Figure 1: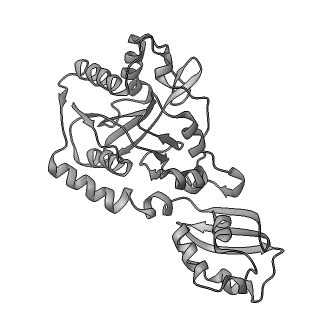
Figure 2: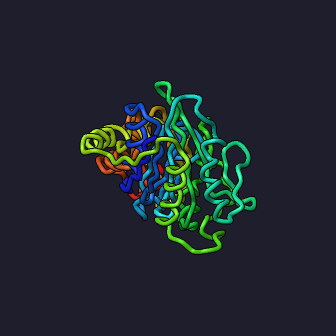
Figure 3: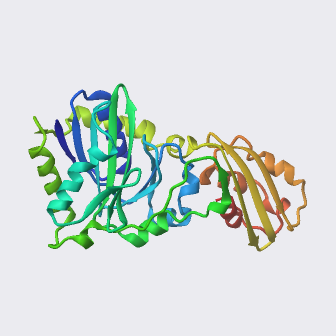
Length: 323
């Protein structure tokens, strides 16, 4: 088994690294890694419906879609991630989680595997796991909340479910806890990382350390730039959904209703008690076929004399309603 400590904290790079290893390595792999502030969205989720957009924009949080299913999770540098890659059938959720539980139990932490894919301490969740299969190999990965900022975690994932109607997988929120709160002796996340890597290395036959080569890094960066760092992958591949939001503006109540498919607006209706000098349908048609992303929406709004369509409504107010 190749044991990799990936020190890169760019979430786009790290998700690309997982796919690169899955698709190109033949050896079993164990990898530890951390992301700077990011929301990692499940493969089949509607990204827009899982995030608090205002918080994401204010804090510069990156939103990245992963290969595996399940719910959205918030990553910061207080969260440690682990990845196992091996032949299909080489393990399941419980068996891949066992080394993590062994480490924690050795440290005196009463961690247990519960439910479908959760690791718990005294009824509180500190880890979620997910997996996928490709080319006859399985990728299993999980989060380990060690010393994460819980307020940020809660704020980042606090989306308003009433705005969205879709069939995408929704995240189920559970009471969560940090591992560091249950340790008998304080330690840093780096020290905890070393303990896990040492445990897996010592208890796995033919385990050897591996560092990404310059060739590996170039290939991962290419995958990052062409896939994981793109709007098309992270938002455009969301399942189709309906979106609705009403807001009181300086020009009256304005309600925007959208139908979005493959990341593009396919239908839109704007309602409200605002005044308009021109048929609003003409304005609505400008958005059809356009990507559901803030820069595209803002460009359209600022390309017209908005007062002709929505009297006294500002561009900033209308953008806010769209999201």
